[in-house]
Length: 240
Image 1 (spheres, helix red, strand yellow):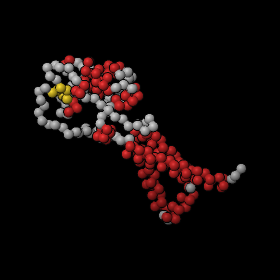
Image 2 (tube, rainbow, N blue to C red):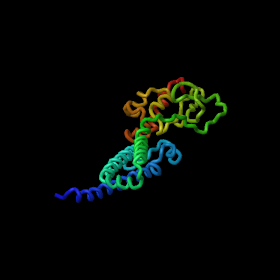
Image 3 (cartoon, rainbow, N blue to C red):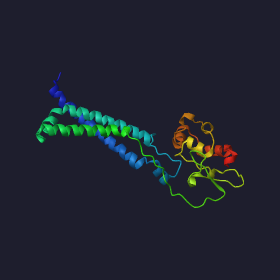
Image 4 (tube, rainbow, N blue to C red):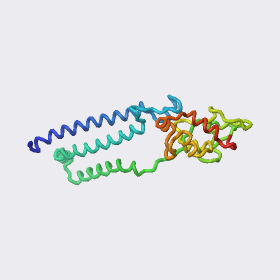
């Protein structure tokens, strides 16, 4: 059996090779999510609504999870790399910074900074801001009503929230404004139909009511027109 001094260089080479491959994969997935599997607002600008982008059957968020796992693998390999090169690192570090106190200060600073970069993003609270579209602030015509997605209170004028009604005429498909970026909860709030009824109409479990319709359509194979038809036929009379 080969002794450790002969095995160590070979193991170092394997670890360094794996680190390089994983690093390239992390970079490649970053490019994939940045330039190919675009975020929702860019998809709407380029492809229109009701569109989801996939690569090998996985969407942007699923590739993002793989990106995270690869990054964790990279950290794991880097730890082994540091362990196998520890003596060389310490020797070079001592020659670069002769003062013992300064070495401890710098080492402590690097440790605190590195730990913070990993832990702080998990602990912070996100900033919440309403997405502002180009809103028309003119007076709303008498034959238009607005409905908030969250409740029945008056909402800022937004073309997506307009429901046209003329002498209690039934809604038409082009007046039922839903798209793949919405959830069943949002559709329920907009058109005052229960989530359970909406989920049953397209054969989707109620537990997925917070999933975007674009993903649900890919998974369960329903058509957005079916959901629009159900809304037209079941919207309460007071909301027509």
